[in-house]
Length: 353
Image (cartoon, rainbow, N blue to C red; front, side):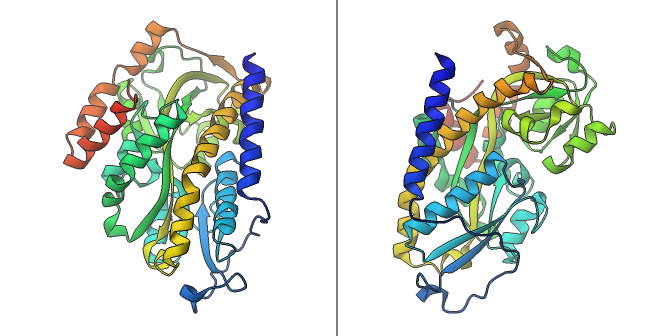
């Protein structure tokens, strides 16, 4: 029954996506920045082009989401706004996307929220352990309520956040040796994308190795790290079972991802098209989380076939894994009034440890 439900959700989500992007074609890859003349008066024949960067390789779940968003925007604006997605860090490294969009050398980016927490401490809400809410409606309601607050944290970077969300139930610990409880992980070097996830890893008695996703395979292969915190779909996409054959599925909802645009470029879009983009976004994000949830479950089924030894902790073992979480949430909440507002919002909708 569960298998049939997963297939049904995935099929339904894809049908809705096709409706959203009907009569459009996905933009072709482009690495040359377009001219910006007469942008505010753009027509379907002369659209405003947003050159977007993403660290995810082509074919990855999140790179596909970026492409589908580009198609939804193209349809919503009747061809007047065209997002050209450049996957695989082809424009800039993932860790440099915020700086690139801030400077205007790249128009937009889809990134993991962990990559910007060093520059935007308020964004750490998306890296809090177990902040991702499994119920999709609650997840999106929390994101919608929190978005204006998070936007404040990015003000000095001259960007407009189109959307963000926290992936539910996606993350676990992939290691070279079997790990079922935190005591077995003590002393290991664990790769993290940074932010609050570093604190969680430290709370387990591990040392952190902060590296972008693109370098984690080699870091484990050559002993720079002993494992990584990673989502199930990325375990599959990056073929991590080849170097980290043990996966402790911790069901951590975290790793918020967001799409943002250089504010100067965003302001060149007409108010009518800005409204059209904002209108299509909630429905699009609901589908994104449906597809994401289906892909997580699909990945859970694929990992054993790839040679991964998957362990699901017992309820008592999960309490041990979650033990550091309260201090991490409390520390973040105390960092600013806005951070306290965000933790209150997410707890209200059921997030937490």
